[in-house]
Length: 569
Image (cartoon, rainbow, N blue to C red; front, side, top):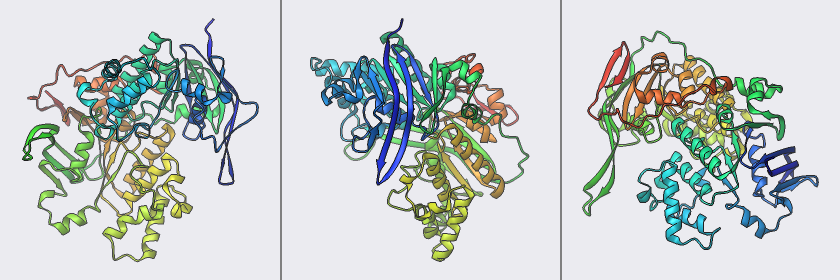
């Protein structure tokens, strides 16, 4: 019989905050055996992370209150009664955690290599610095960090969100823990890296006999990598059992809601005879990696190479690809947030030919919604001030009363409560913060919006709400979108056409129907095969195709294989 590693019994947690009592977790009980993977599934605010953090007793002692009947036992050790020395020995050594936001866990002033070495040596005093460095290097390579030796000398700000998450996974595994708490570990990763990382965790689990608590809102992932599941809502476990059985025959209405939350099908094709709004011709973006004493570039990186595309008024062009493929760089080039070569026209006029005054006015016509809603919203401004900021800049002629009225209008459009006007971003959930970001973009009546991974950090049901909101706004006011994402299921649902990017180039472009149902490029096929399917019955039959760039040629060009469907050959 397999030994029970972790036993949680009657876990009940209250937070006492400013004379307000928040009942975060209610009578939660579950067990995790050695080598087992338990999925905790639910939306933001359901109590998943609070429950998992209590396992390491990481909740703030000043505010968290456990009921007298609460019990957490790890390998015979009572966690809630343990002294600080016992907890220090467990944390990071026998119990490790991968957090959703890697930047909150990494020291911005320390090189990545130094942080990994420190994590290894703090729990193993006999481990030499050189040996720890070799161990760190090997793990970075295993989690997919290219040129790992060079990158160990870099700081956290020099990595993308996806790369930082891989580093955090390496750090969590460096001491080969008995229990790994993975709190939304792949939220920031594209589908192929997501699959690779989770396969890696699964392999390491098999090798080390490691138990995993897998916290996620992605039902397809939960089904693929877990055997048992606890579905949480409002701090309670509403359903539990073998994951295949629970998802195939949900007994609780909330479980059924989660399963049905992901939009199905794709956007209905519409006849679009509108004019071209965005016309990009041979766009290139390069970054200088190394320069000499006089500032002359010695080494450059081509992030975007020879991109040409057109976006019609009222159309949504979805851009997909892995981290580092150039998606966000292309979006920023279109917004003139990065220097580029080539030509980008807006309404038929090259952006480089606009006068300073025309360029200033144009900014109100082009807006962007960023991936991290919290990072892109000033914590010092109220929601009303954030949304109205663009009006102050671009419409100084408006009175304060007119600005407030316009802010209230867009808040209503994005379904934000009107009492949010004088509140601050930290008082809202991730989904609500993203609505604030969308409202800010809408306030100045733009024609074109770049959505740069605008839904990647949100729950499935919130993702669906935001995408449906964007579709509704497009229909009502004729917005044009460049929709950048790594979640291909959502891209399919919102996009008229899709461009697939790899190593800075478009490898395939066409209607959503063509790209999804008749993919031609091996990289596109690889991306599609990596999509976790929300239906467990479909997920178990999914077969992954891995593309390693063998058929990628720098000299290739886009060829039209059927009307409107282009492939790099």
